[in-house]
Amino acid sequence: MAKRLASPEPTWEIDTDVVVLGSGAAGLSVALAARPVRDVILITKDTLDAGSTQWAQGGLAAVLDPDDSIENHVRDTLAAGAGLCNEVAVRTLVTEAPTAIRYLSRLGAAFDPGDDGGIALTREGGHSHDRIVHAGGDQSGAEVQKTLDESVRHAGVRVVEHAFGLDLLIGYNAQGHRCVAGVRVALLDENGDVQSVGDITARAVVVATGGFGQVYASTSNPPAVTGDGIALALRAGAEIVDIEFIQFHPTVLWTGPDATGQQALISEAVRGEGAILFDAAGERVMKGVHSQEDLAPRDIVAAAISKRMSESPAGVDDHVFLDARSIGARFVTRFPSITASCLVVGINPVQDLIPVAPAAHYACGGIRADLDGVTSLIGLFAVGEAACTGVHGANRLASNSLTEGVVAGTRVGRSLSWSLPENIRPAEDDRVSGLLPAELRAELRGTMSKHVGVLRAPDGLRSAHDTLQRLLDKVDADVVATRRSFEATNLLTVAVALVAAATARTESRGCHRRTDFTQALPEWQRHLLVIDADGTITPQ
Ligand SMILES: Cc1cc2nc3c(=O)[nH]c(=O)nc-3n(C[C@H](O)[C@H](O)[C@H](O)COP(=O)(O)OP(=O)(O)OC[C@H]3O[C@@H](n4cnc5c(N)ncnc54)[C@H](O)[C@@H]3O)c2cc1C
Image 1 (cartoon, rainbow, N blue to C red):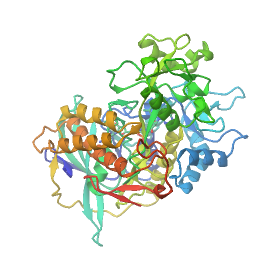
Image 2 (cartoon, rainbow, N blue to C red):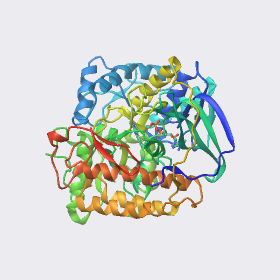
Image 3 (cartoon, rainbow, N blue to C red):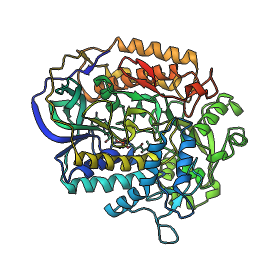
């Protein structure tokens, strides 16, 4: 297993206080909060809006209705998290969420107004009250992205697009502890070819690179979401936690058996507005499965759909149908993006049933961190979907992640304004380097979708493990360094960790479902840490 991405030798060096990797809600919030006091460089491997934030439809969860309460939101989050949330982190997030919404509004975010002149609130799966703030109907993430993009540019943050964070620079403090001293970066052209490589030395490196949905062939995540930050943290020796908990969105638009890559999401908010799931034989999917029926938490809905598909009702085993016709013509204005995605494939959601299937959507696990971003490595901070703060436990409650990005991002930026780790010079890096050929991505992603999806069987996990071991043998220092081969290698690193943890967790809990251990077991109410890029696991 390579412990470093192979790349050309560095030819430049820049020094700063804080370097942020990633320009989604989390990274931008960090940069904005740290910038008034610190010199901040934000690098992002594509354009600013290439991450998941831009695509979020449903919105941001926050208690804004006087009939709702912090306790309700905490309770719903803990219930979805299936015994693995950190209650202190949840309480902090939920308590600070309303302030985060007001902050975004002050920065200029135009949230959809309600009838009473305040902000409109809707409900999503697992929420006991209306508390989802949205913008442009289903363009909530785009509004957050635009607002933060503009604010960061006005704040004087140095933003470098097409700059790929490769690996952390490691040094040692006076006590001999390993510390993060900066990040090695490849500047890319628009085709993803390397223009130059350099080092950004910094007192704090903040990883805000998002999740890793692209490890699956079937995902709602955009192409940039390849787990780079988690992979580079693992290679540097940081702890990764809860990586087996991948939330599968129950309903992405099913466009045919051969569809791959990012698939259009049919937001839970559509079910919040009254749409109902049916199988191909016309039977309701969620009736009798859960007390909240079609608004049950995501993992329950995704598992119910997967199970129903495996029974092949009316001979259809790869999708079910969402009937949103009760919403009527209002669907078009309430959900303009979803309407557009459906129309592209010839479906009019006002009149037609929408074919849907589950797809990888959200990584509940990631780099172990607290809500101030502090990780197991001095000088390394993690935030947003790349981090695991204990807020989501074994399953994220819908719309808590954008909120977490802004709340935790602002906290991280503020705390770095107050104090920075000491200045450490990078030491000589003698880690073995290599890259996976980019063309092997398809095999990797297909294997993960087939064997490590919503329902995980022991023989499937074994088969995935064998495939990954074979792919590891193809990692080589002579593979051409491009964005695609960097990403392929990072996807492989994340997949190895994910399969190891999914194999080790012999129970079903939250969004991790085993066919051979179908119940949650009390002895498994604990976390699994991955502590090495070779997939070495340690229970906590
Ligand atoms: C279709 C869809 C709908 C969703 N709907 C909702 C919703 O309604 N509500 C909700 O709360 N959540 C939703 N989510 C989840 C939510 O959007 C994400 O969890 C959240 O936006 C993650 O924010 P982030 O800042 O952590 O990461 P991202 O927004 O994914 O940003 C990651 C950034 O890191 C950059 N990057 C990655 N690797 C590197 C590297 N090596 N070097 C430099 N830069 C790098 C990327 O280019 C990107 O800019 C949705 C997700 C999707 C995909």
